[in-house]
Image (tube, rainbow, N blue to C red; front, side, top):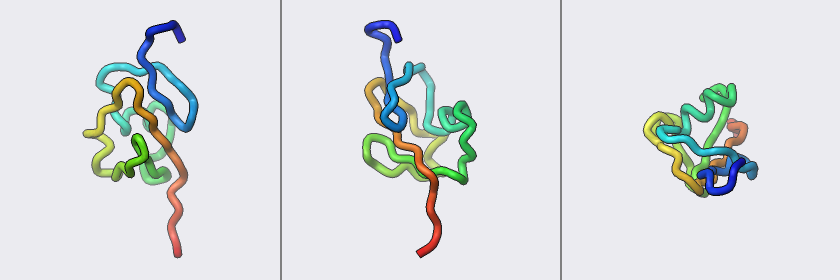
Length: 71
């Protein structure tokens, strides 16, 4: 990554940020099925229904993990 390029962090790994990138678009880009993953942006849970409308900004930290069902 060139210096001064805006980045986000996904599961601890930096990657280039791009304008208009949403949580849903990033999941699609990574080939993650929306119903197979849970997401947290900067430590806050992001509901599936909100992912299309949740933009990623430079410096954001996104955590994507397998959703666990049961109890």
